[in-house]
Length: 363
Image (cartoon, rainbow, N blue to C red; front, side, top):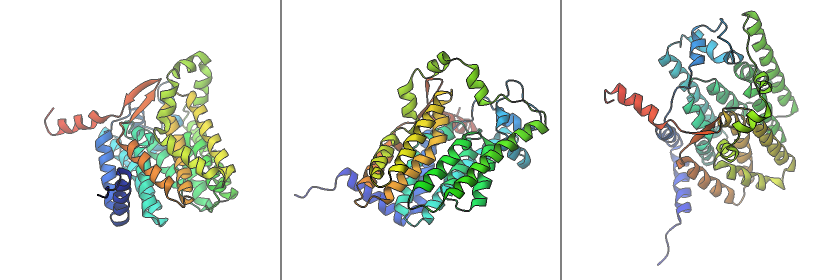
């Protein structure tokens, strides 16, 4: 009797069929299932909602939030100044980032790779963070990082750099990193002029943020100031659960990233060395943060996705694709968590259902 297909073979065949024939429905189902499985919740504190009501008056000291002024200004202009409207705005921006990724990946012509990339993003800790901290500037940071994976026009890259840095300093590091990898990839179009456009943009965005603060006499505590105010013992204490913290940055997709680097090393050593250096730099930045998973995931998800997609394009045998699909599926079904001050927090599964039950009069 001939044995049936193995589990991985069935998974690959089913995923391939759905990606080719029902790409849109597959991604809609993936997104809805991800939200249902992870849940979602308002970011603790609600500081950016308060700023959306009045973004032109200094927040109480210590003022960290107005170092990232774009989201409150957008919400203020759109009138999204109540908890409900602000939550909807931020959720729409997250959805916009996923939608942009889905369309841009599909337009590259390979729906199977596009669907696989979307599975990886849904399984990545960045999605857990986005859904657990709705109301943070992270939604715009995610959207801008997604755009930088595909945009080619220098003027558009410059504009994204300005807006991204004006929104949050994370894009000051993530933006040039994404473009550097695109430049080093031999089958991608951007050159060093495109990288310069993003660097110029993020510098302009930082200058715009400082101008905004000066115009309205807003004093902020920079993240560098905060880091330097603490001694080394404090940061060692913050990182006392370092293995959990590092793992939480990519989760099981660390393995997919390592396999991709191995695949690329002989073909493009400069790219792999740059990738390793960037991931190490992101870990270094993460060491000096309290919201460890959030910062690392937002910095590192797009460079990691670029590396995996680049490696898949070089994978003539299909072995890497099968391994990445298996890892992505396993990562997706693994319950998410994030680390803050070396404390592990589960994805906010119950929070979403608590509000739903309350709305239905069941709790």
